[in-house]
Image 1 (cartoon, one colour):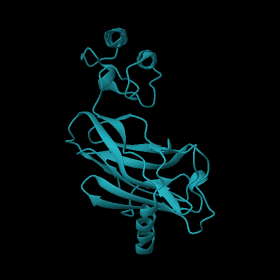
Image 2 (tube, helix red, strand yellow):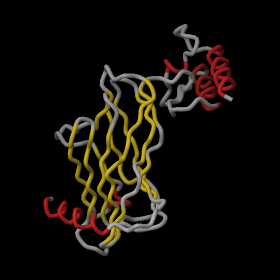
Image 3 (cartoon, rainbow, N blue to C red):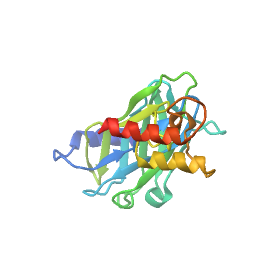
Image 4 (cartoon, helix red, strand yellow):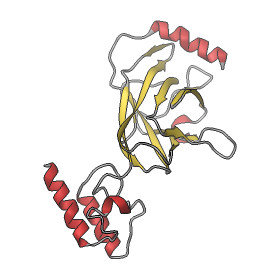
Length: 222
């Protein structure tokens, strides 16, 4: 591990000067206080193939990476993209985690040019402050053979708590939320149905009035 970190330090002195579009990406998501949720991290790399990545992930206060029963970080690599690679995670500060993805052998590269790299299970504390927050990937070093470059910090949105009208919990209020409410009324409750977000009139019952209320929210945002 120390040897790998030394290699990364040496490589950081040889960073390529060109600007690349390659990046890590997390789709915006909603998590409730006290909830745990699996979140996908994607590597989009149409320009280069990589045999190592190093970066930090900083989460907002109240969020953390969960641990498994074996007291390990609950981070699962996508074997289709990271077959043969090692993925190591260290907590380097409150809410900040250092990731190192590498393989022994310079001729082995992360498979593909887009798609999920790994999933991680995040946990929101019961007293996590609600509202729109941000996570950020920083101190990134993507290694191409013996060269590398540092992409700009990459931020993504995390909503803690329910967004009024976001019945399907995807972080947006759209016609899909109206359909989710209708499905619930018909007895076909969607898997990720958020009762609190769907109950926009706060009468503790999901009815057609809530579907109308969601439409009104959509119209007010146009």
